[in-house]
Amino acid sequence: MNLNQFLALVILLSFGIPISETVTAQIVSINDIDYIQTRGIFTDEKEFTISNEINTREFSDGSIIRITGYTVEGYPYITYSKINNQQITTHGKIFINDKFIPLIFDQQKTSQMQKIEKREKPNDIVVLMQYTERLYSGQTAKIDVKIFDSNQNKSNDFNQNYGYVPNTNIKIIVLDKNGQIFSSSDGTTNERGFYNTGFFIPKNIQSGTFTVIINAENDNSKSSKTIQIFNLGEVPDHDSP
Image 1 (cartoon, rainbow, N blue to C red):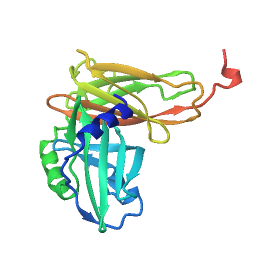
Image 2 (image 1 turned 90 degrees about the horizontal axis):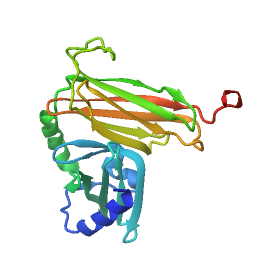
Image 3 (image 1 turned 60 degrees about the vertical axis):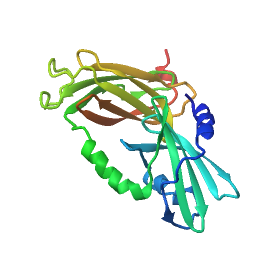
Image 4 (image 1 turned 120 degrees about the horizontal axis):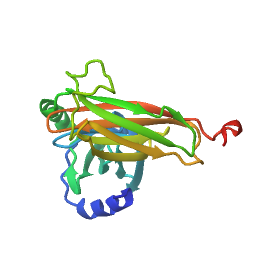
């Protein structure tokens, strides 16, 4: 589902969502909204980081601000912030696994973070990778992922032939140099803890750095890793076939 489809759906369902944030502030820009500053939004189960790419729209002479965007994990969200008598009240939802989930703001955030920390899975798996570090526009970046039990692969050896963790869910988000989502993929590791993917860089893309976020999670554990892939731009004449 793209952002426009998500937005159309959520507008129909957004009426009657309870307001859950009240803070005292004099709003000057959207940066005065708390979660825009922290880049974090919460559900009852998890914390998400929002990407830099957001869309805004004002209603009622600027007293209501609608913000839509994606988290770095690839989930679309929408929030409404109401400004009244120097107070900002915010409510919103995030779309995960084909359903809308309410977001939690400010005064509930501290207690919610404590709940999330208690429920966090241990980080006892390790994400190891082999990938294309540098390439030109018009080429495909390859990403190979292996998941190991961290206690059985303390040397972080990608080629180790034991200690694999199969059936681990992998979510990969690729951000461009502006922090916008460029590509994403997801899947499950095979019996040898392996998952591979890639993304194509069109010829018209200028040089820059792609940030790749890898999230790995199964029933018992979770881990993540962030890498960078460098796009060198157009192929120089002397490197052309």
